[in-house]
Image 1: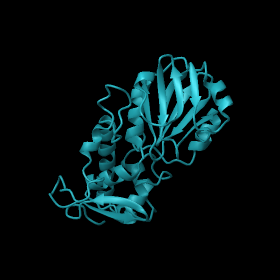
Image 2: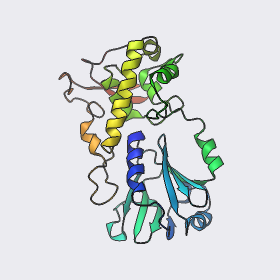
Image 3: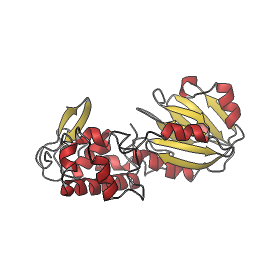
Length: 273
């Protein structure tokens, strides 16, 4: 599932191509993907413009010229592609936004959605999300306060969107590796140690910043000629690397299940807190 770095990469790249361009047509191939009738959706968007693209956690929020918002959550298997009709990907599309001779294709939204909302509805939909890990207001002190009183494992804490927004399976494992902590470590043990808390905080910052700057781990380019999207995939240290050698110590990376979620780690250089 796309996480903060993937959505931030999409936000950055799309902002270079779609802002203030007239939406000349809309195609809805799967009405369950949207939250209105297809007729209303098409009518609201045709002739409109996207004036700003915002990312909140794993969502993209397209701000429309008429004050409304398009809220996108790709969920598992969702992705985007920007191109002409001749460049159309060989994939089923659920929604297409046409901007003259270019189209923004929404692909794989069987679990994801693209909802048309008012600004108040958007705020309400995002109200339960935790703070952004890369927000300028996020510092070590605030991070420590988020962990204080929490129980459970490091893995489940990092992927809990109500605590910190935007981290999922991949980056929780990469952050745990960067902090030399096992994903099964107890959050309360980390919270009680200023040294471990600081190590985890800096690991979270460095991993997410690096991944976002390297285009995340999504495999499909956003457009023809896009060499950035997915570049971080080859740089993942432990995620989806079961049986491979640890890049830090040479140990063998293992996969375990933690409360129903897969987790990858090196048992040799990652330690239990």
